[in-house]
Length: 106
Length: 118
Image (cartoon, rainbow over all chains, first blue to last red; front, side):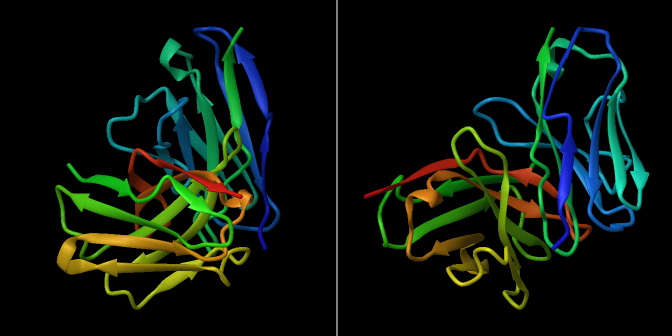
């Protein structure tokens, strides 16, 4: 099975900061990697699909990159509503999720 | 706008079968894949499985495959989850979601908490 390792598990940052979250696959997954944001008590929300495509309605401060085994989600300038937990997700063959990164206010 | 709504018992007894239904509104269930994901309290997301609208394709998490069945009812625009032999480890918020053919979940239900009691 392909394992997904997300880092860091938690992160403290301030409004306006640039933040990067990393997801590493245990083997080559091409570009089949997606990112979600989850706020407490709410369902996950799709942010980025197939590594770098921005879901409709998602602000352009969110971006994704990578290929093969290493992927990143970047928030260019943190806004108050961005403090949440972020998950990566493998598209194939099994929809494995990363362990999550909790982004907190510093 | 596609909307999904989970329904089913919030309390299941140990060793019994957990059954949930997801009703899709604002769009047809036909032509898409539909999946279930769960989240134990305070923990991360776990993929359970998905089904194609024709019911011809099912893929399950290998760790659950012996206990899980996902089926679709196109006449009622809904799909269902059955998880047999429930234990406390199955206590979680269960989400239904629409799965794009490229492997991402673009529409989600609000989630429903299922507690397995002893």
